[in-house]
Image (cartoon, rainbow, N blue to C red; front, side, top):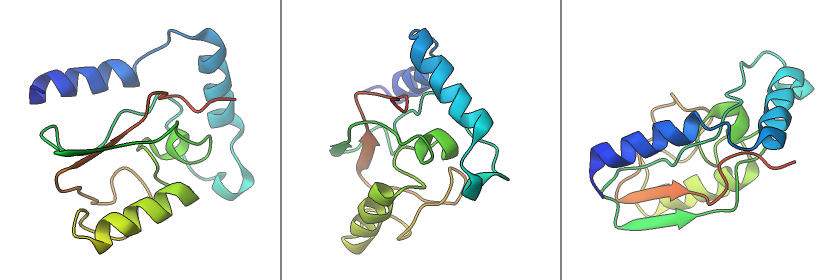
Length: 123
């Protein structure tokens, strides 16, 4: 895929408001927060894919978690599925670090893109 085309798609995903029920729910989760993340500013928007546009491997999950990707803004970051996934990618040389805590933590993926068919945390 054209790298700029994928960047445009990611921007469209992150700005999507097409499903009013999902928008209301994900934004409510971002406002009320889980006590463990009370000091976080939640992403609270649809979570775009992550990884290089020319990736040869695509990992497709189900959807971001309410207090994972919906909080961090990166797919499968900040939840147990991401803990396992990013550690495994690191172990085989496909990630720059073994863990991902937030979207600006320096994690890079090598030849792998992570995405999901559902970009909003479902209720």
